[in-house]
Length: 413
Ligand SMILES: Cc1cc2nc3c(=O)[nH]c(=O)nc-3n(C[C@H](O)[C@H](O)[C@H](O)COP(=O)(O)OP(=O)(O)OC[C@H]3O[C@@H](n4cnc5c(N)ncnc54)[C@H](O)[C@@H]3O)c2cc1C
Image (cartoon, rainbow, N blue to C red; front, side, top):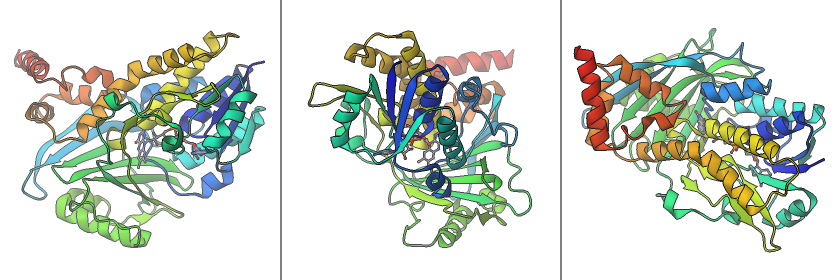
């Protein structure tokens, strides 16, 4: 029986581990926290997952929270005027063809870790560092590194062609809140852009305490949204959030007038330098490991793609391992496996990196036109599930002009 070791029990590592177990492989997952520690730990993400990722979880019978989790049916987009505070200049709502959902990673990962053990997987709790990797490689047919943001700089080589940034482009501040009595009634992701200042997202999430809302601030460093300090208490940071929204997005402040922070480590601050790494990790002893998901391709969460990419990566790697039957997992197989994943991930990476930059005028025109053309709003909304559909027309001025011209002609007729 083939022995596979996965380092990291997050979205990709657990999905792949559970998928392989169900196919009869002998799988070990080594991760740095117990299920109890994950459940009792801090919030980690907004983890909005779109239809095709949810389908992968359904196919593996891992969608345990689907009935209870709020359904996200729309993407609501708003951009404010560049120089006047709190003035909307673009506003539209796009309908998702099929709903998205967000299950707090703390409940999902802790439950999946327990399920992995119950199905016969070996779960080892240990923090891995670079010096552990050779012995892991000697003991398994294949080692997959799925440590997300962990371990990266110790062992990874950056791919400069696909990594345009050397520093984080946003300061991230995440709050999980509930409305008294109802938790949340939100059925959409609300996506607000404040030019030169940052972005603000709100969406419903299912937590251990029932339905709640995740509020994510993506602040351009040192601007007015970059106002949250780790030295302040979670309550003090929520007060800051209310003050900021009151000044820049008052309609969003009204929505959270009565919310309270969710019990237990419900605020997170962080920053990410978007980076694509060479996926094959070469060890001195001539052995190789394969990186997966964020460990190979780390994006800022501005377009909510990371968990979706992690799911697509796990699904791709699972199929590739099964197809490979008992042949050796050599460097070529590893590179081809990552490249199969990259066929999809390149688009979310390109889109996420684009959205971190000031938008060119033709992109503003497209976003503005979506307010008049529902078909365009719906297409942009559904591209969260399939970012490839945005290319080339969302990234190329001439293609954007032609697409818009065709759409406008269709609307006029
Ligand atoms: C604020 C924020 C908001 C986000 N919002 C969204 C969103 O709306 N939609 C979306 O799709 N994505 C979102 N993401 C991204 C998404 O959460 C991640 O991309 C996704 O979880 C990555 O999956 P992964 O399997 O690569 O890694 P992870 O899920 O991060 O798992 C990594 C695992 O490795 C373990 N580990 C780390 N280092 C070590 C080590 N040295 N030894 C052993 N174990 C280790 C960790 O404990 C964890 O179990 C967001 C991220 C952030 C920070």
